[in-house]
Amino acid sequence: MTKGFDAEDLARSAALGDAEKPSQVGNFISVEFDDEDRVASYLFDADIQGYKGWRWCVTVAKVDASAQPTVCDVVVLPGPDSLMAPEWIEYKDRILPEDIQPGVIVPSVLDDTRLAPGANALIQDEDLDEIFIHFEDMQLITIADAGHWVHAEQPNELLSAIKSFLAV
Picture 1 (spheres, rainbow, N blue to C red):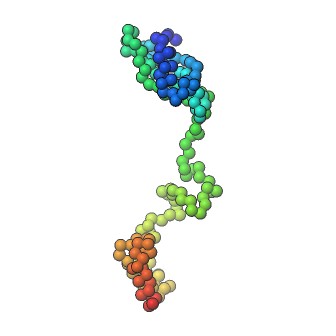
Picture 2 (tube, rainbow, N blue to C red):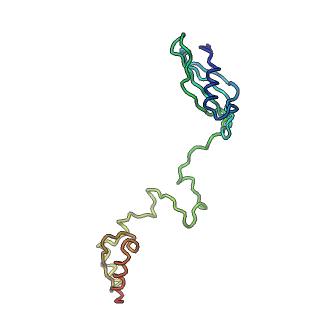
């Protein structure tokens, strides 16, 4: 590989500038140049807690042969032996039956056959005749400004309707 320019000291200085502690920038590993020998990526060992096997990568560029090298970027990248997080697994695929306990709320999936749209949970007109057969004294009332949580949204109106039905 052709060596385009030597900016190892500049690259190390840039990594030291980004590191929390000087001891986090380790030994020089390698340098790679682009095809025109104008951009170089310098790698140094990164001795950072929690980043086993990672490397400092400092990108340095020269606009032409007579220009001074300039630091473009300083990052920490995983090396071939890096400790990496496992691949992401969707929540619905990783949750186990023992994860579910009373009080634990988990998101539902769109195609969950156990769930019905809210409108389907309401009494439909075509169901009223069947209901009247089984509950002759049934009264159907509507409480304004209340949804599914009528007991919380309109507690006084609900209590009044119950008392009226029971003739209390």
